[in-house]
Length: 280
Image (cartoon, rainbow, N blue to C red; front, side, top):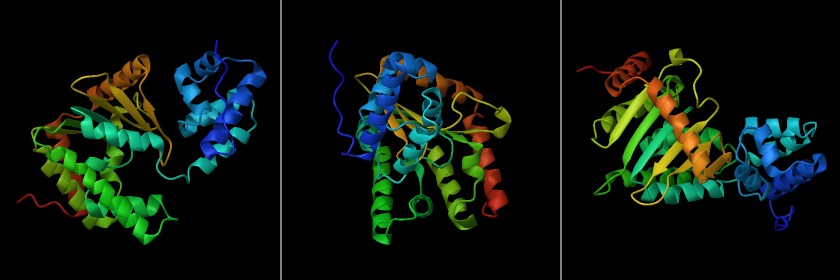
């Protein structure tokens, strides 16, 4: 068995986190597979964390800290990762997104980037990145809006989105910004290659609690999954068994969501509550 790849903990915060995670695991005498089983992940995910290539979601970091007896030290280090710029996983995701033939998304907190208006995106970015300059915000907003061009290709991908009810209820940027964003969703939902569903609170506990997930499919090649739990708390999943499990989670959420026509009525109702819906 080859020796584990050496990692320079001074090279980056993810590398420091990965090094500490590996030392804690080796201290208790567990293999990556044994640790993965205790936190309900594949051992390949643990390997990616230890190599500094992925950052675990908050709840995963907390579980790792607890099972390894780190007394909060590991998760305290994780907290510093929140201020990192967009991750390698997200950059890779954008590459995959541009090539995908189908994109299935569950969004827990906000409208997906491909469907955001400029004003909505700016509001999200401004609050999510309070340390960023106005120029940086402008650049990130422009980049996000530019991504939507994938939906205007000659042969665009199928985009099937399930929005948690919180997405259409949370007032982002005030009634005018939110109303325009909801109107944009309604307009986009009329496109033959775009389906939008709402997952109501009444659906209760579901398989994707705790974060958003995207399943990307291609004309050739295996599916990949993108997991998102907040800024920089992202991961690209390529392991086929793990991808199948996450796809199953999406299917379960999809099955609980309201049908597209009823979802549009829910969006219209939300706009009425914002005072921005005109039935005429």
